[in-house]
Length: 257
Image 1: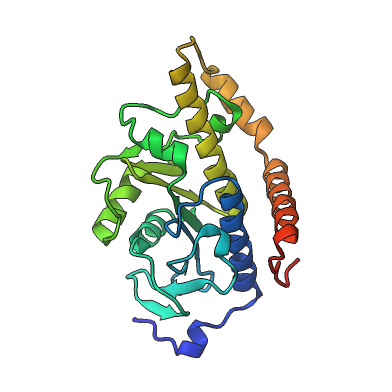
Image 2: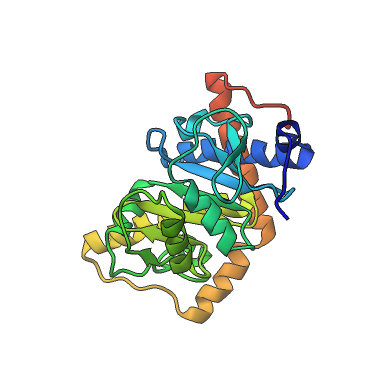
């Protein structure tokens, strides 16, 4: 049966929604500090915990400009249910990834520079040359269908299909899509993917002989380096880093701190 919501009901935000959007807004601004901004072309979303759809950052804002109220609510067909602002053209990245991955509650798309370069290396597999590369149980594959905008449900589904069970996928000559169960999973996945791409590309440019650990050691490192307490520590550190930065520029931290 089709769900019908009044506008007031659609836009109701209990503490769970508001907390999630507050954290997700901060994650946008943290990624700006990590050099992943690209004018107003990056965006992340959160699955609505009331099963109403997807909360997506509104268009025409840079990552550093995103705060809790800068999200619009879409259903899974892309219809705007509430909120002010323009819908990103690449909304199908978010709806189709979340459709395909019930284990994800958050999805991010950026044009992080080293990841964009690696997306052009279509024959390359991302290797765990550094600790950051050990994050990914399944190396992010390459979607080869287009380098253009992922602006239709068909293209969104194709990207999600190529992603498979990985936490990320490269879009050829374009950027990356990353997902996570929580924002504490999403943020390091995006940061570590960019660092792993940088390490691999710089190693290739160096011309020096190089190697990566054996599978058993990679599995062990993943468990010892990235348990939940380490993910919590990453999140806490990035919050402190963002607070230090925003205290200098006078940004509003919101009411959840």
